[in-house]
Image 1 (cartoon, rainbow, N blue to C red):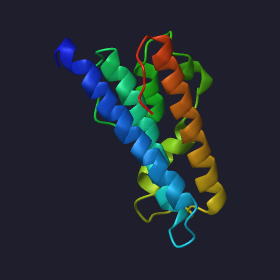
Image 2 (tube, helix red, strand yellow; image 1 turned 135 degrees about the vertical axis):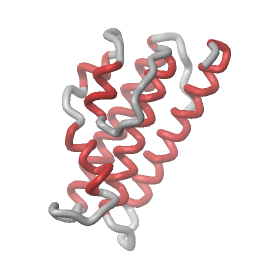
Image 3 (cartoon, rainbow, N blue to C red; image 1 turned 90 degrees about the vertical axis):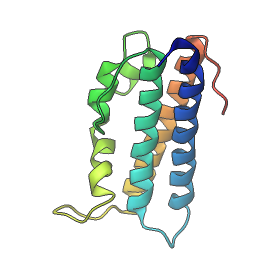
Image 4 (cartoon, rainbow, N blue to C red; image 1 turned 30 degrees about the horizontal axis):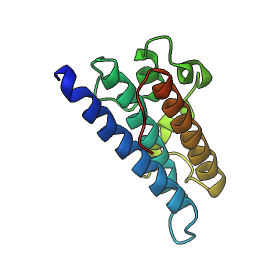
Length: 138
């Protein structure tokens, strides 16, 4: 990607991240929807926010969903990186939120925790972008 394309691509990834977060919050408050959907959308929000940082830094990233592995690619100087040293619980929802398996179904407390963490990460990433001179439209 050429340098002039980076700001628009970063904004696009951040928009998708925010849309997933808003969808997760909406699902969380709808008693007709399964909590696992909120968990999955929360994971997706954080994944896209981290990938926006990597795009901003011109760092190629693998097509993986492991939030800890993606976060570890972020250079020092992004406070969210140390503020959230373990995103493993959120990472699990990429599979457990979409497929039946040998794990318990998500309950509302799981969804609340996942959405809260996603909102916290979103806010931290946005603050970090501002510290790097990039204004987030949110």
